[in-house]
Length: 158
Image (cartoon, rainbow, N blue to C red; front, side):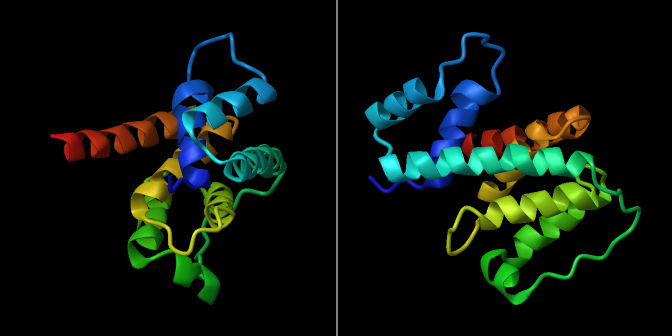
């Protein structure tokens, strides 16, 4: 089974993180369930590390200075992994107010932390959604992004 960290994250996000269920299982229970579903232990641990780093990034973001206008220049490694569609979508999200400069940087850092050779636009959209979920005060942006992600999924299904 060819699974990666993002697949584990999506499974967790769809089934546990973004739910109103108050009976959320602990980490050990989640690990066992993920193994039963068929995810590899290495990928499960990487996903939990990724999520733990996410909360640290969100905590640091709340204390930082907000920039009113900034131009983002991607370095060679970022350009190699984020194609023109991903970079353009980040710019679009920033222009319409879904992302600010700080949140954009968290998204870029979290996408690169996935250690994938190339990131597809749909994968990046899910990362944006997960990042916004952990950002305090970004509920409206999260709801807007959630609509975008699920509208895209419905378009593919129909």
